[in-house]
Each structure stands twice: as structure tokens, then as C-alpha cells.
Length: 412
Image (cartoon, rainbow, N blue to C red):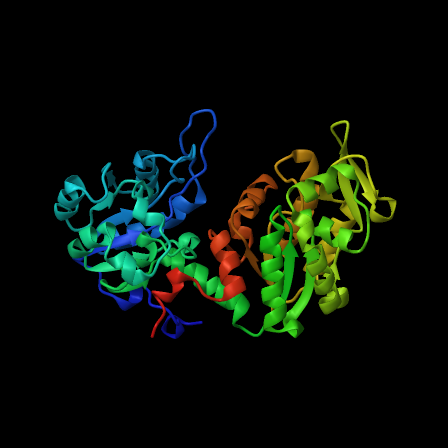
């Protein structure tokens, strides 16, 4: 897809030189439990690209971002974020502990061409997380204070585009609105999977079956003939086995019932009936016994310990399927195949992800746990076609084909 064919507005559609631009980025970062400070991460490194481009084009750059939510341990000021972003941009990112007060207004007005300013955590404002229309948000304090100081609004945070929050959609009724480079890349990658004529394979795991079911339903409802395979692992793989009538064992079944994941069993039976043998479920599993990994075939279930991974036979079967994919295929990956954070239960994820890194298909890796798992199994985002920073936004977009933050940049 060439740039002129893009169905949404990008930085190529506006002249930013000498303009004050407000940029919504997502610098929300993991916290080091020992130091209490944020860890360097891919989001900050990625957003540095858009920020650097704008500064190089002599824009006056005003950044809006968040960290955590009020009341949560990771709800922090953004001073450390400015320091990390400065390192990756290669230029100083000023920080001011204010967002709509006199200090913030004064700092924005005093910016010179090419300078960069990061405002305080936008979620210090109660109005930020109210979910309402762009028009309603445009009348709030955040937008009514900052919009008159700016010429353009740039949404570069696909990862928050599923939230109709003030800093995401509120500027669009007032300011010209376009996608930043990260937002652009995310939408290009998703379009490659969803809109082009490709066979789709789903590699679905993790610990959030509700999101997995959304993705499956979206792909199946679009055109079931486009679905090549569903390779299931994680909690979803266990649920599919339960839907077959298999007993997992008390520890795993108690966990599933406690989380109310068993509510999906009836629907998973319906999915199996629809997709037939395109659904692949584990043929063996790994459970914990006295702190050790023990593998068992599904015909020998139930087991006395908690199940934490697919077995090696399953992982190798999935890897073979993945490696037999073609360049015309697209593979969407949602979640790791097991409890990857524990080394002894990382094997299934490692085998499958190594196959994904070697295959010919277009590989779209979901954010969150999948991104972390990539590093822990010794791979890099560069080993895949695209690693999304979106997480929940990616799932919502695949499921619903629209997001509040996407609608405001869509070409009318």
C-alpha cells in the first residue's frame, strides 16, 4: 500500500514547520519493583521517532501522555519519562509538572522552533478518563486551554485509540488531526492482515480468553473461508479441551472457575462446530509437580498439578504448521502459549515463536505479554513483520473494525 493510498491522514498531509503541534503519545511504562522508577521500553523508543521528526522539521512539540491510573501504584509524574525520551530522541525533552495551569501555558508559549515539551501526566485531570464524544471533550478544560495555543493535533498512540478520552479525541473538532508515525505503522500492519486478500492463521494463548474469543469471532464472522488455522494454547487451549469434555484436574479447573472463564465453554463448542478441523488444540500439556515441569498427553488427563504450558509435542506440531505457511498468509499472534515468565514453562512459547520468526507469512504480534515474551525467549521485534504496541486497542480494532481514535484521523 503506497502512502497516497492510505485511508487515514498522516504527517504527510500537513506542513508542521514553524507550527505548534500537540502530540498524544503513550509513554505508559513498566515499573521496576526495586527502584520504583520506570523501565526503559519499546514504547518510548518507538515514539521517539515521531518526536524527532517533528523537531527536525522545526515544529514546536507539545507532548501529552499518561502513566497508570489514579489510585494505582504506577500512577506517577512524567519527569523520568522526559529523561528517557530525551535519550532516544537525541534532543532535550523539557518537562513541566503542570498541564493546564499558568505554568504549562507559559511554557508552551515560550517554545522555540524545534523544542520539545512534555506536560504532566494527563490522568491527573479527572475529565481525561471520562468516555464521551469528541465534541463534548472539546468543551472541557484540557482542550479549551491547550487547543488555542496549537496549530495541529497528532495522535501517535494507537495503544489508547480504543478509549474515547479527552486527550485522544477531544482536539479533533477544533484542530487539524493526523496520525503520527507509530499510529501510521500500526494501522498499515493491521490493514495488511484484515483488508488484503490473505488467509489468516491465529496463534492464540495468554491469560485473557475473553479477548481471544473476540479475535476468533471477528475473523470467523468476516469470512470463515479466510481462516486457515487456530492454534490454541494458554488458558484458551485448556478451555477448548474442557469444551471437548476433558477433565484438566482440580488446580486448573478451580482457577478457571474462580476467574469465571468457564462461562465461555458453550461458545467454544459453537466455535469448534463452525471451524472444524481448522481448530488445533493441545495434544499434550505441562503441569507443575514439586516445582518441576512434567509433560503429559491429553489422554492421560486429569493431572494433580496446575497446568502452565503446552507440551513439546504440541509446540512442535504448531511450529510445523507455521513453517508451512506461505507469503500470502497472515498470522495474528495473541498472547504466549504458557506461563512464559517462568523459565521451566517457557518451552512451548519459545518453540512456537522461533517458528514464527522463521516463517514466510506476515506475522502480526499482539502487544503486552507477547512483546515481553519475545525478549524472554531470546528474540527481537525485528524477527517479525510487525509487533504491535497496541494490546487492548489491537484486539478491539480486529474485533470491531473501528476505534474512536481511528475515526478522528480517517479521511472523509
